[in-house]
Image (cartoon, rainbow, N blue to C red; front, side, top):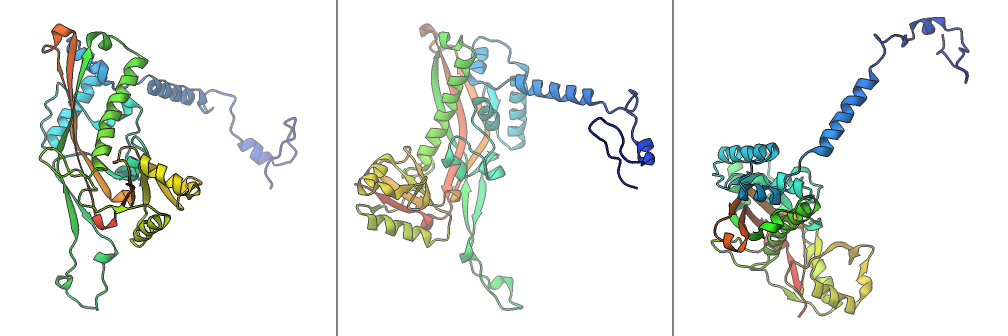
Length: 352
């Protein structure tokens, strides 16, 4: 027996009455699928998502400064951050504490990071290509291995005969702090202005982080060393110099990206503007990066840059010290560390 077929006017064109009799009867409300209920639930879900409160630094500061109760969302965020920090062995001492992911979600910056999904951006293409570990407890050991740590051995050999060593980097919390003076009149603003200031604050923290990563600064008790510290930069003046730099990087069997400072890009354009073609430089991906020292150009695998963020973001409000001038002082503290897993994989050049 064939399937029932219907003409345009809905009349049955086969004699398969068995199928017709077994066809569900949707004329009653007892056996008709409840599409209305499903649609309503979905509508409520969408409405809740659209009206969900976004975490905003200025609103938090204003509430603390004026002794206004935090919103339920802010209270829950503070409680969760304190509990998580406690579980991680870290004491959250801010008047308000939150996880970095919540702060980023509130700023319009995507928080899902490379270490979690390998695909999403944080604030730009650069950080999204690094390996980022958020919300960690103190100290992280990151091992590094490549084809040089692998070797062929005869059958029956003892594991103790393997003399290859595994390189590891230890990341520990370093405080990145921001001090900001807000006038009382600023804190009385709301809406879009709040969100714009919030975005600027978060991006300022991340810009400082990237600037420090791409520096040659020496390590200190306050700050990790920049990834270019101790790396000798080759002077670039000709196309041959650029080709050699790329060749040395391609030999490393890594997925390299060009980082090009403004001055370096300017000098390259003077040499030959066609080297930039179809979004690539010399056939490889590149990022114009103004947060590295001007004149530098690097060819390197960005996924070997590991960045760790520790504990909660801590916000402390001082509405007493400068109250005579109508200002509220705010301290925002975050904890980061970073390193490059294999310095030999960095090819660094400079234009004088």
